Structures are given as structure tokens and as C-alpha cells.
Image (cartoon, rainbow, N blue to C red; front, side):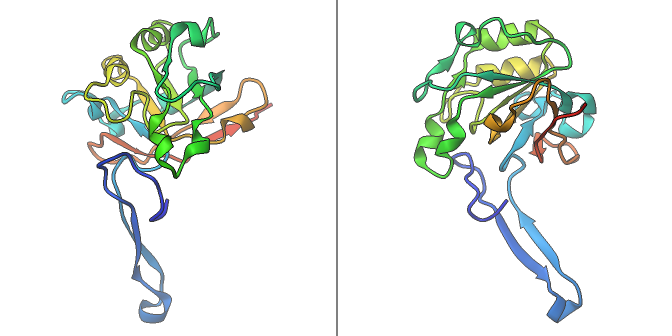
Length: 202
């Protein structure tokens, strides 16, 4: 997180400023100003549904589980990730599906917002398999700048969560990674920043 963190169009920019310093106050304290969905973050159902569960009300088990990395690299700008693209991926309840588009390579440029997106049918099929957590290495699971958010709505209505702005999924080169995307428990929050990690646990 820094002032250079790229944010979704229209979201508040990040500002990190000293509130107290060792020289003036005897200790350092940083003031943080940013949106709830800045950087790598999760979307709670409250993000899209007024009656959806806020991030602090969700079962922590939604944020930790076996990772299933789905390699969909090679798609062009604003291309849908379809059920055919995903194929017959082996996933089920408790799994965290990570869509590896490779689009994090465009982070910091305007092209970052022209990412591939998960279409409604493919999203529905993942949810039908019991998946409740879906991540992507792009700023949104849906098309950035669209007026409708079918994948977001489907996941929210299923009581699931979305993790966006992931990066470095190519570094998960071991089977059955343990994924943690535990968020800050913002009271009533529509989402929250996470420190996403993949662990090779024997």
C-alpha cells in the first residue's frame, strides 16, 4: 500500500502520512486514508447486496483453504473467462479458486483495467460445485467500468467472497497450496484489504 497503489476508477486514492514522529512525539504513528477495497482485497456480499453479510460477519473459513489455480493466461483484453476456458477443473466446497490471467503484468498502466473477466455461466458452474471463494489477478471479477456485475451478484447471493488484485500466481508451482486471504475485520465492511499468501504445507 502506498500513494502509488493503483485503484479502481472512482475509488479513493491511498494516502499514507505521518501522524506522529519519533522526533516530535517520541514514537512513530502512520495515518492511513484509503478505500476498503484498495490493493489486494476481498469483497463481502455487502459490497453488492444491501442485506449481504459484511466482512466482519463472515466465517473465517471462507478465507483459508486449498487453492486451485486455473491457468487462463493468453486471453486478450476484455475477453470472458468461460466455462469452456476453465474446463473440468477439480474443485469443490472449501476450495479457493484462483484465476491466473497473467494480467497483473499490466499493473500500473491503463491496460490493467482491460482485463479478462469471469462470465456468469462459468461463475455459476464454480458455485454449483460448492466453491465460495474466487480470486483473480486483475482489478475485478467483472468487466471494469461496466454498469452490471453478474459474477459479483452471483457470488454475493451465494454468500461467497471475491479476492481481487492478486499477483504472482505463477509462483504457486507446488500442488495443493494452502491459501490465506484473511481480511481486516472492518465493522460492517463491504470488503477489506488482505495480505494474500500461498503456503506449501507438508
